[in-house]
Image (cartoon, rainbow over all chains, first blue to last red; front, side, top):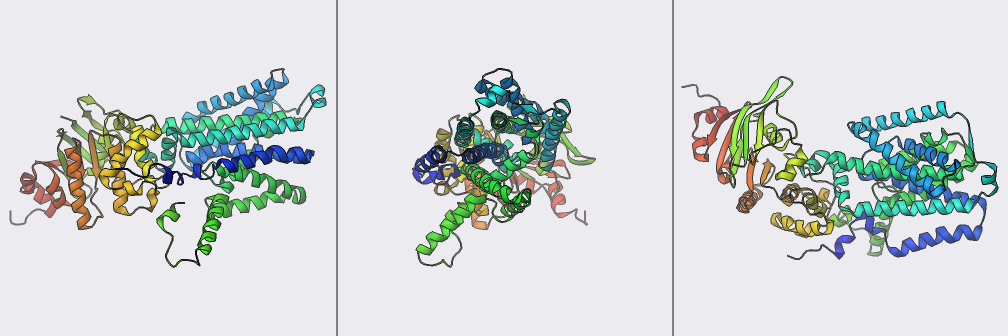
Length: 337
Length: 242
């Protein structure tokens, strides 16, 4: 029997809904053209931070959104990436090579701590990852207490746009990787682990292997993001990229945009960083309270984030067009969206 | 012989849920597993699927000792199951639920798109092809049970364990499900079914095993078992006039 395996079905995958190639081209063109047109440092800076935020959100989402393993230790990955990349780069390694080594080192570290950490579930896993990241942060703070500054010749030839292009490229690669992951057969097992570990196992899914795969990819991209951070900052304390803020920002970006989707972290990253930079300029630290409240509201009222809000508005609009609200409840199709 | 249990016991902190049960499952049969509440039926299921290891005893599948084999690896060998409280993956589509079995089960298909096409066959067996694109959470109870069955079938099992598939269904759904179970057996799949609805089990099973308080108290055809004094005692209590 022939069944709707093709066209109609594709509408259903959250990954495909937003991937209209037209939209991607428009967003990318804007990200490339706009900063060059304005050509101001604060715009380069804003767009750099947005790209970095998107990468961090995508990274966190691979483990937290797809595999359902809530990590509070992503700052550890960010920090390792920054530490390794910065050290190699300042010692004369070409930046791109240093960046790749930093990312791979982060993923390797994640694999080593992953197997024991995944013995913990739910809240215990979250606390375990937080502990690992904090141990790393304190260790680095103790052993590398002095500020790390680029040498004079590097500062002399420093180019902010170059930093942005690297960050943008990474955001594009990470988003592409998240998309391919969700389309791959591996994602079935990863999502299955999130939905119901025992049922997934009964269907032949090797649970630990799929958790480790999600963790490896997540750590790789978080490490690369840390490397880009190390490439941009002229000087910082080596402890700084290990600060829990980076974990929470990555998590909030994923949730505010739409956790478990590919488009979510892109929307979340752009929105979060834009609002944060605005608020931070006027309100200094109060913006953290505002984001805390926003995060709680999203989790309680719109678990699907901005994507869900957008979907609801769109549905409301189409219903209006069709002549007033219908008396009946949402049809199964609409429920599924 | 497809499955053999050798003196398996399972204790939970002193509570003997299953005690020294030995049984055999023959290829191509429908084996009904019945018993009063707390008889250890689900525990026995979990020992066969490998959710936990037995405290004592051994489990053989196709002559191989699988006592220490993990659940996912047992699925690769050809043991699939449904759960007493239905557990499809709620946020995934019906098609993805079924594809899970085809991608990860026995004789898996490595390409996702080909696995999706292949698992349509098992969706068709349970009558869910038309709803392939819906999320599992939007289905009714009976459809969620069918979906779980499709997911198990997509794993190409040799042995299929059904944990109270008929519970919570209305009489006409019970009848169609019984037909479905028979047709699955006719495809060459051996079935063990745990069921509370004794009448229904007697209607489809070739052989019945009765558990009471963790022990196997009777085994035989439905006719033999229904006239067995031990079974009557277990279900109705001992007669005062004996």
